[in-house]
Image (tube, rainbow over all chains, first blue to last red):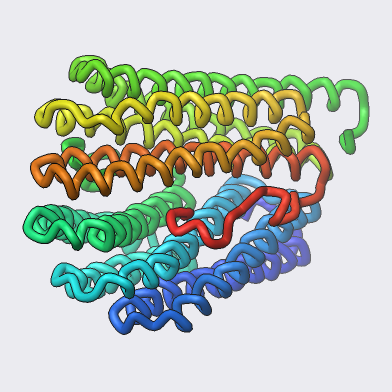
Length: 235
Length: 235
């Protein structure tokens, strides 16, 4: 700790603890929203989908609370070095978790379109893809809570699994569309859902990178993130 | 300014000015990258596409510089109130601009796929869509540089134009795929390119919202952002 005096240290720890708590709540809600959106999609449950869309606002509000708390913390405690880096990481992580919530909302919004168009075989691959992505998010946030650079590093290694899922779903859907022109509209929505899940994996990776930086003060090397320069669908 | 003393104020102004400069450079590069990616796409210019992909790293490095400069600024100047809010906004805006650069890179990466598959009529709509999105980014960053809440508000109003473009391209491409099954693979990539441009508009809107907040201390009301709850493709 760069802050001086027992009292100040304790106060900072309490504040950063509150910040971690808000982010943990955001993360839990975002993870559930992704998994719930998959269940709503598989069951064509429009009421559940509407609930997911409505509840995303709660995640947005939590991000605003994180931002206000971080600004208040910086203004009151004037954290230095590691502490300041951790507050900045918390700010950025809250922003990423908010976007993960948006992906869940986006998936939920597409349930009605799929619903109107019957079954599409590649649908069955999505929940497994979602499970891996959600576990990455959970572990990335656990790594943040525990300042665990090793876990953060390990999360980044898993992103390739999600990308592989995405690429295989992409190819399957394209073939499917060629064979069933009537399926093109719902299939394009499934393509976007798969893309959203692939992005969730990317965002979990981003969080893990921030955790790694906050914990070590150094950036994870590009190649260590397992980036694939040739991945057509990375963004 | 909440900081006290002529010297401190001047020092803060210089630091935040440097931060603004880095973000302006990031923004200029991201805007050019989007426009260049459109030209590369229309001309099927693979060399230009490769250059855009390679140069995105520069934007990533600039974001890292912004983060370091912001942390240094907070540690050294201990900005309060408006100043602190502005530094936090700068941090978040740099993150958004970095993502806009990623969209340009992603579009550039798809040029080769389109190239392999000849002409697709909806292609011609993309550059106009890109122009509006890039102007939104430029104006959002100008609003940040000038602390112009009014311009920021105005940028948000323009997002609907980009969304309308996206929805029309989406429908056109789906019809196109149904009529030309062979075009499905390139058409899905065009769909993602259109989606990327739609996201650029969303990100410009996010920046404008942050600028509005940094300038006024209040959040733009949800409905004022012209959000469309029913927009299937918002994320």
